[in-house]
Length: 303
Image (cartoon, rainbow, N blue to C red):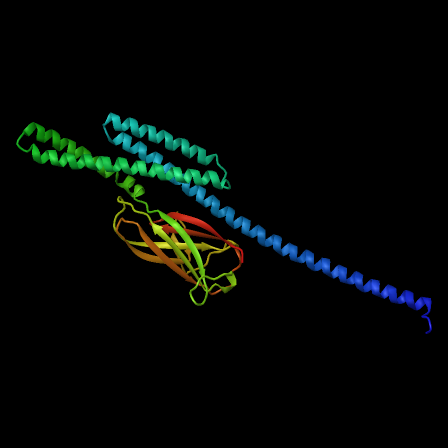
């Protein structure tokens, strides 16, 4: 066997090294391009979540401020020293919680959740005082009938009744706040084409969102329109073809449903038909009714 000339061997080696070097350059170029796109997507996801978290914090602050103001209006509208003392303590407690909320960062999920839970206690206490004033009004009406033959007592009862009627009118707005609905037990399920639970997001053909409307004896019975808003990991809203008013602006909704509310707890199910590609990641579900956000929850789909 004849040996190749030394110059030919060097040429072959040089060619092989050039091919390897070119492959390495192409690999790193493609890798850097992929990382850049991933970083852009992550930044967009982060900005979308930060906006929603800040909106939730502002909603809580608004409700705390409203309750603080309503406590003050009740105090100035009644003459019962014992109830005034109790209301004053509750008002100071509400102000303290509001200050804690204002000093809390929107990203502190644990503290925000605690203050949201405290808000439910504040709302419950307010409802109890509204019912107490209403009960006093009913007692007064009974006294008017029982003392019809005694003029002086009748006139005194009538004056008390007129005062309570005025107090009741002033409490109309307070009743509206206390009667706000609450959505609990929020769940998001992805279904395949057979309406079975899908194992992967790519197999999802329908999104089911279910929740409970809590019992609320102070809320008026009748029809309510409930809006469900789903935000994707990129911050976009799965559009259901319409908008609804919320805090002096229009928000897109994903689904809406008209319910017949009776004051008792009820379950609500809504569905969204998938007509676009859905990526994996965190999906935010927010529930709205009567111009208020009544519940929200985040769901993670990793497959």
